Amino acid sequence: MSEIKIITGGVTAAKGYEAAGCAAGLRKKERLDVAMVYSQVPAKIAGTFTTNVVKAAPVKWDQMIVREEETARAIVLNSGIANACTGAEGLAANAAMADAAAQALGVKSNEILTASTGVIGMQLPLEKIVHGMKLLAEAKAEGAEAAHQAALAIMTTDTIPKEVTVTFEVQGKTVTIGGMSKGSGMIHPNMATMLGVLTTDLAISKKLLQEALSNDVVDSFNMISVDRDTSTNDTLVIFANGLAGNVEITEKDADYEAFCEALHVVTTSLAKIMAGDGEGASKLLEVTVEHAADKPKARTLAKAVITSNLVKTAIYGSDANWGRILCAMGYSGADFDPEVVDITIVSIAGVSKIVANGMATDYSEEFATEILKQEKVTVLVDMKEGDASATAWGCDLTYDYVKINGDYRS
Image (cartoon, rainbow, N blue to C red; front, side, top):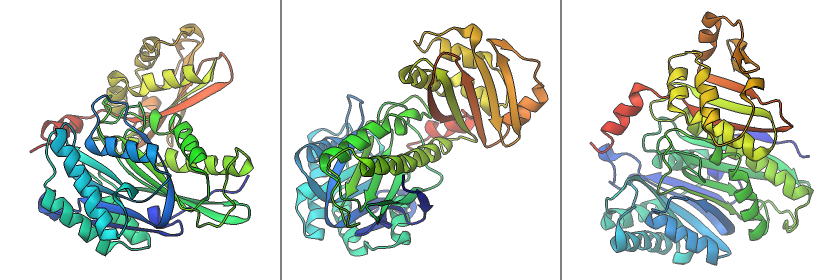
């Protein structure tokens, strides 16, 4: 298997991609609020979208494009206004956004994907959006700084931009995958849980590109949660423009597996950054369930722990209240024997097994507290059933989460 190297560069690191982030006046204080990622040649496209019955206008648009078109040229995104629950007017505004971008780029409207994030129920101001698309087309450029500006422009309550890039080899050619995402709140396992854009210069069939992405999110973006809310706007798309020069991958061979492995590094890296940057969060919580009877059970149990508000508040308080972990597992719907379960907590401060065979060990509360004080805390749950494992990522629940969401619109 080809070595996977993590590099810098974001969504413009792969050959043939440009990006931009501009201020169109949708946000206060002239914040960057529109972004573009553009492929210089037609690129194969695939996507995964929210499972919420309430879907924003851009989600409906993108689902149509991904379903009906083989390739696309760009995605344009805005922050500040979600364009969700906006009816026919919202659909028209989204189409106008795609039309304006297409005209500015000299391509067709059905070659433009769209994405929006922000307040639900507000209408997009057409003049500002149309002007923003022109600004993006003029500003788009190659290079890491252009990618970074795009990543900044899609942030809402995020405290940091989220970018990950890797390289690997296929058929002796260097292939790059770059990605950016946003997501800090309204994040819950049930699809992509975010806005995300991935770019690669790999040559691969649309069918396999979609299959790789759909399979990947099950163990990456579907395994994070901040607040048990699944957004109306969740969108993850990938572009593959083939400029790496490899012979197009059309079968699930070693080259396809190399791509899937590299893709998973990008998606899980972005997922962990998103979970750790949850609204008001002070800690990243990682939960690994191991030696489960099967993979679905391991996933169910891990997600039950990271989504428990009682577990999240215990982690915030650095309290080794392990009963909350077992309790969350018990109501998950998965059947297991609680009297054989071991629980271990891990961080840079050390390792402590706090539960053995369903009962407390003679652990040090002071040491356990020190472990839980760190910025990343891992909980290992040994089911002693089989060989399956799964990992989920979340964060602690703090006072600041309530403050942020209590005045989100003000």
